[in-house]
Amino acid sequence: METQLILMAAPLNVNQSNDNTSSDTTGGFDRFRFHVSILRGIEAAGFKNPRPIQADTIPAALEGRDVLGLAQTGTGKTAAFALPLLDRFQRKRGRGPRALVLAPTRELATQIDAEIRLLARFTKLQVVSIYGGVPVGRQRQALRRDPEIVVGCPGRILDLIGQRALRLDNIETLVLDEADHMFDMGFLPDLKRILSQLPAKRQNLLFSATMPREIRGLADDVLRDPKVVELTRTGPAETIEHVLVPVAEDRKRDLLEYLLEEDDCQSAIVFTRTKHRARRLAEQLDRAGFRAIALQGNMSQAQRDRAMGGFRKRQFDVLVATDIAARGIDVQGVSHVINYDVPNTPEAYTHRIGRTGRAELEGRAITFGTREDGVWLRDTERKLGEPITRRQVEGFEGEKIETGRGGNNRNRSGGRGGARAGGGRSSGNRSGGNRPAANRSGGNAGSKPRSKSGSDEGSNRPRRSRPRRSGGSSSGGSRGASPSGRGR
Image: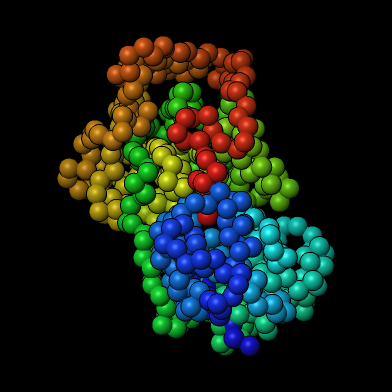
């Protein structure tokens, strides 16, 4: 049995003369000559034209080559490996599981599972997701049906292998998604144990946003003559306007609430450094009248599902999350990412702000920087190859960040009309009981000042009531997710 590993790559034996093969045209997904049932799924999903990572990796995967795909989050990597797998399995049946897709978090595994099901809706192919935090009984029962594709996290995969509920003898393709984050979370030993259980001959597809030394070593060990597709940039995607706002530590929450009140902030993901901080900040925002909820590692799977489901359906406007909990987040129409605390590494900066500006929509990312963050800022700007634009918010000035490198602490202007964190409304002030008021001036004529008042915890403030948005997209005009803009 030959096994394929997609790092990202997958071998496919495609009969190009099959009557169920689409015409060979140069437009859209027809160029790949997928099985008609797969093309129906693509159309139903609203996909019109292949994204760059798909256009560059799908042909190699269809040929059966190993693939190494380096691309930022939100660029369509899931469909890039899912479509070749579905096409091959639809053409030639076999006993499953035939493909193993490994993901670092439960949320990402769930999203991959959902997207594969969407694309496979006009086939009888089965996909099962496996992860911890939920009872194992249903997962064992689902595996007895020999699904073609298993998507899961390394820990639960190893548990089920040890219980003899999951056999990997028939695996043809191995897919590693977010490989760099698997290493960050300490999964490398688990990955090596899983690799030892797989057939020696297989296709390997590996996707990663960054390529640290350890992942490069894993790729060299696993991949055989891979097709390397490198679309990743050192910096954020061009659809993301990202700025840094200097602010004192004890003024962060004032600034956060101020920015969340802006009209163009339709939905936001706020990143904190610790689980406790995420939970506490979400509670504080909720008391202040914002529809906010936390997503952090100590939550049960049911609580995590409620948080993510509510955020996707716009029952919550603000998701306060930690890096690990949020790595699998793929929500269309997120207008803002706010780094309440700076991330631990420069690489994590790109991952965080990649939660906005997805599927070629525009987004804004704002990082709160204190005087303690100079080393992080220096290292991140060095990694990006350019300074991060500084913005001042009137009423929050005074914090100076020393990076140890001349010229990086000056204020910069530019971008698409500002990041709403440094100008753009004619005036505005807010008060929060005993908190100092924050005033700000800018350039948009016709804007009306607003004010907030209440106790320090916001208990006397009126509940914030934005209109509920239907259809899973924000009401932010061009930011709204269209059917063709779904994550792929």
